[in-house]
Length: 246
Image 1 (cartoon, rainbow, N blue to C red):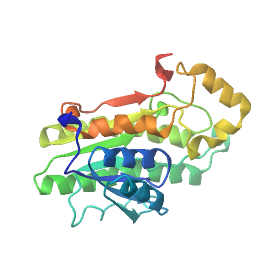
Image 2: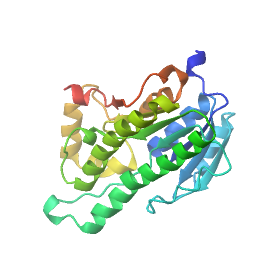
Image 3: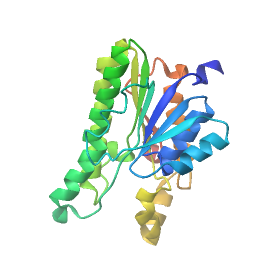
């Protein structure tokens, strides 16, 4: 199982205070990585879960509503693994969607992701190291959805950037891949789960017959960070209970 160990590696997980980001941070720590948890709110719960389990973790406050907020995260500390999980969503009919809701989502989900990843890669390349990037994409990297125009556009963009960056950096020792979660029980999906009709329609479409848990995403993200995935570049791994296969 050596190829699945992250011992001696240091990871930064954005949006690690709750949900998918929290589960990924804990999973990385369980695989042996030292984890830095970044979020616009304190990640104390995540850090506590890691340290209680015998792992090493720290937290940093970063609000990715400023797309350039991640620029200094890689100064003075070598980071080997970057998981771009921070993201927001806005819901409204396309005819009513506002410019503010468009810009807010694109800034966090796509612009901040790119420039944070750029800063990470510059630091890795400058020290002659190796690294891995895992972006959190979505089913809506492949489908249109409804009432989430900026989210859909941003997640299509995440899939595209994942492939572009893999093309540029694969030969330089940086793996870039993405995980595309299906319908997961998180804060972002609370509105859907609270609507009985939408909730049932979604469940009826999922071959696994249930909503996913944040922990279901963690294993895929951890795998893409390990030496076992060293020849995996530009992949978007669907973790969706079979949704896209339907």
